[in-house]
Length: 164
Figure (cartoon, one colour):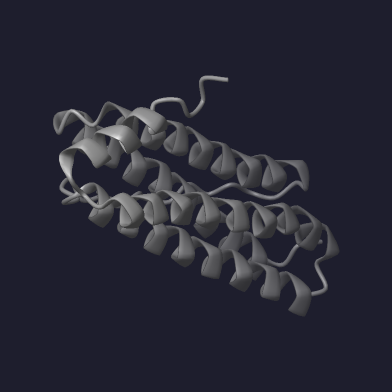
């Protein structure tokens, strides 16, 4: 049996993952307005992934016979500055999500909730990938600078995401 505290924490994580999706959709819209089509594409793909993450927890709660309680989703910002500033905000957000996942995992350990530990292990691993992916983009921006031709090249590369 999963504790009430764990169910509440998992429902809050569903909310956090849906907020992440909302945030990345807002970044996609901002990027599109700036004609950064590659960044817009990357953010749309990221938003879809975050929605999948929310659904993974949503489905887990249902599978173990617990109640899903959908919580309000905060309005995300609409302006994000330069590509470097925007991707820095993405990294900061992903680090925040990583900390949330770690707290959930710690709760599962403390409560000896083995099935939640197993499910959350996927998220622990996923967050390593999430942060590394964003850091790679930031490293490229750092290496080439934010000159228009450099941003254009990175933008062109980001258009390829999700088009395998």
